Structures are given as C-alpha cells and as structure tokens.
Length: 126
Image (cartoon, rainbow, N blue to C red; front, side, top):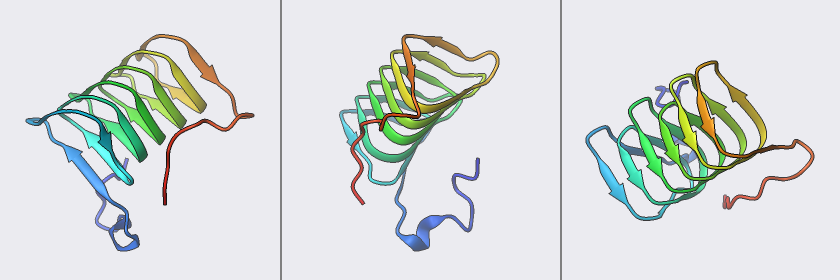
C-alpha cells in the first residue's frame, strides 16, 4: 500500500489529507484526493478518490469514494467502486461496491451489494 511513496502523485496534482493517530475530527470532510485516517473521524467523507482507514483509525459516518481500504473501524455505510477489507477491520453498516476483497478475520455487520454491472454512485469532481 504505497500511500505516501516518494514518487506518488504530488506532481500530478493529487491531494492527500491525513487524520493522524492523535487527531480527532468532527464534521463532513469533502476530499477531492486521497484521505488516510489513523485517528478518529466523526462525520461523512465524500468526493474522495481513495480512503484508507489504518489499523488504529475509526470513522463514524458514511464514506463515498472510488476506492476504500479498511484496516480499522467504520460505523456507517460505504459506497465505493472497490473496497478492500483487511483482516483487522470492523465494519458496521451497509456496503455498495463494484468489487470487494475481504481478508480472513475481517468483521462485517451489514448488507453488502456487490455488482460490477451497475455504476456505484459517489461524488467525484476532477
């Protein structure tokens, strides 16, 4: 997961937002690039290209993004083109995605709608 690689997309105008382990954020976060959450975020995330929830991170709210990688906790609905649920993840909410990868040990409590045939609705402006 080369999220902050030295040769990342900074030159192409890609924006990165980080909620660090010691950080707490409350409110709706509209991200037009990528977001990594290692702390606690209470509120919705929309317009994101990629959302990564680290092992110690948690989001209480809905997530709308092109790609979501969950290694921490999510209490809310997830809408993404692709969702990767790591073995340390816990999701309590409904999931809508075109593709989903779930590692052994991950916990999901909610309804899952996985369909490659339909376009997943999320806000994205480029």
